[in-house]
Length: 317
Figure 1 (cartoon, rainbow, N blue to C red):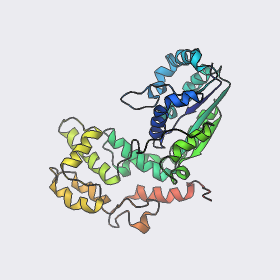
Figure 2: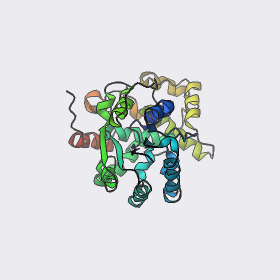
Figure 3: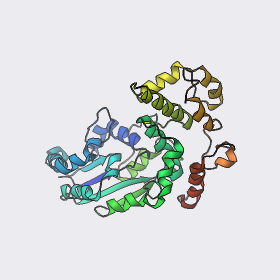
Figure 4: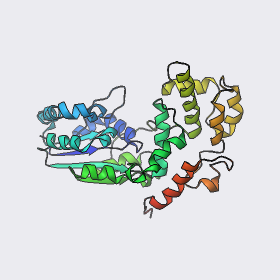
């Protein structure tokens, strides 16, 4: 029987993929230190994404936990579960998790919280990877029409949903990531009371595309869908960018865009709205001229002004 458990619920775009890769890379060493991170890696990643499916929670989560708990090798150890999609579970599904884990005395949910302006941008870029063709402003509107019901703008909706069943520890993603690439994994170890003498991935996992890359990708999604062609997966898109000479440097993109096969298509027009984005600090867009003066992107402007009123108070000293 496990003596304790940690349930890492993400949410999305808060370093979860890096943490999961880190835990898998150190699976054996963690076991020696008294921590069990079940290896369920598949093509979707190293997290426990299958465990977070509602049907699995309903029908298979309890037997899964019982099997792990009855394994003699796991006696008196600490279980670690990690999946961003745990954050999408409904209250009744969280209650089912609680019932399945009822024999474990100490359970804590770990939730990372990230500045809304930053995470909204990352979530839009991620949606494009998953074949969406919704523009950045359109994506933002749904959050700002009803901001109090958006779990991005109001993360304590998620916090309170899990708090009904488990103690929840909130971890400040933004403050951690100001340090270095390893900080998020080291903070995770600190929270679970494990020493940090482990190996760390030296590259970013599931890194977000820039706005301009995502806008190109979005328009390709539109073109391919209109022509009934297969949508590009992330790797194929990167091959497209490389083959067509499209560089990440936004200063060069204006000249390179004309060389693509889609120069007269919908690809070039929306792309130009981000021409002044040089990967600058997006928390001060007007000073840095992130948004072109002659382009109306009201939802973006709302996002930045709204962010000033809800940004997390950080003690950097």
